[in-house]
Structure formats: structure tokens, C-alpha cells
Length: 239
Image 1 (tube, helix red, strand yellow):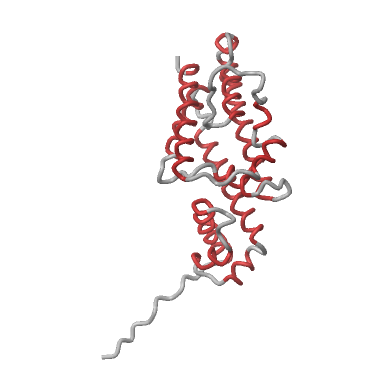
Image 2 (cartoon, one colour; image 1 turned 135 degrees about the vertical axis):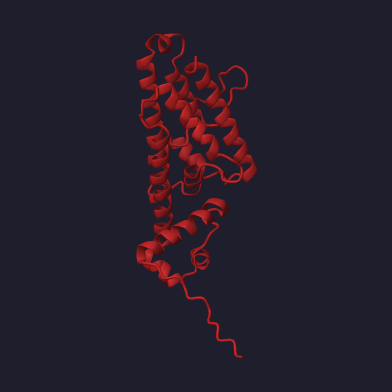
């Protein structure tokens, strides 16, 4: 008896569903392989569509990259807001909940590093939309954490007024990076820390000389930064 089984039909999607599917595929490739190392043809092949169909959705690779960064930005904001929602918890509890949620985000099997820092590294040109989205997100995160710490200081004014406030401590952590640690006393030859901030003009220039860090190195930086920030907050917020 002849085999009359036909091939499985192709999945039919609407234009919006196809766009989201392509962005899902692009996210995996861009994040784990690198944006510049991933061509549009590879994204189309992994998505199971023709390159011409992809170009109908995204006129250029720059447009695809911008959509990828913008969607990642939107999802990160949603995750951040959910972790720190004002639902009756104290400011200290909401700050600690943020870092508890972050602990799940930096596990080795799902964390290669910050996707926004990767975008800044690969696209140091400030006119590129992907660069603008990454900078916008970084500024938004700092503003949100400052707001949380301001709420904490309002609730505990005497504690925040003594010595160095949690706001200043946390602001220093954010300015100098996740893995930054002091190594001995500062000397006259030491650079001002503001110069090395990734969003400063000097920092943006330095991005052109950076390469994408290896996976294990970035994971270690994630863990070190999480441990450093959490320990500071636990000392100041959980008493």
C-alpha cells in the first residue's frame, strides 16, 4: 500500500505573530552569539521564513536590532515593576525583593550578562536606535532605584542621616559597576570614577575598545555584583 502520508503543514501565523516569532529567534541569537556575529539570513533560517519575508517586517538589520533592544527594554521594565510593586511592603522589603528576583535572573544557564551593556558595546554610536534604548533603560533603572531608596530614607530619616546614607552607598554601587571593588587607598594617579561610567562621554569612547566578554567571565561578574549589592542592602535595610 502506497504511503500517502503528506508532510506536516507549515505553521500559519499572522504578521504580528510572525514578527514576535522572529524577535524570539533574534533574541536567542543576538544574546548568546552576539549581534554583529549574527546575520539576517541566519535569523530568517532559524525562524523558518524566507529572508524576503523578514525584510518585509524589518527593513534592515538595524531595524531588527532596534526592535530587539526595545522589546527587551519593555520586558525588563515590566519585570522590575513587578518585583518592586508598592503592595503594602516596606521600602526595605521591596528593595530586597528586587535583588532576590535578580538572583534568579543571573543563573549560569540563563545569564550571559547585561543585554543592554552588550548593545552599548557593539553599537557605541549614540545615533543608533539600539544604543539609545540601552542608555534610556540604564537611566530609568537608576532613577527607579533612587526613588526606592528615597522612600526608604523618608521612612527611616535618622538612620539615613547617620554617616553615609543608603542612597549614597547604592548610588556609588550603580555608578561604579556591578563588579567594581576598591583595591587599597586611592592615589593621586587614580582616575576620577565618573570618567569610567559607561554612559559618560569617556565611557562611551571606551566601549569601542571592549569586546563581548566570555560567558563564564560575565556570569562571575553577575554573581559578584549581586553579592556585593545585596550585602550592602542587608546591612543597612534589614536591621
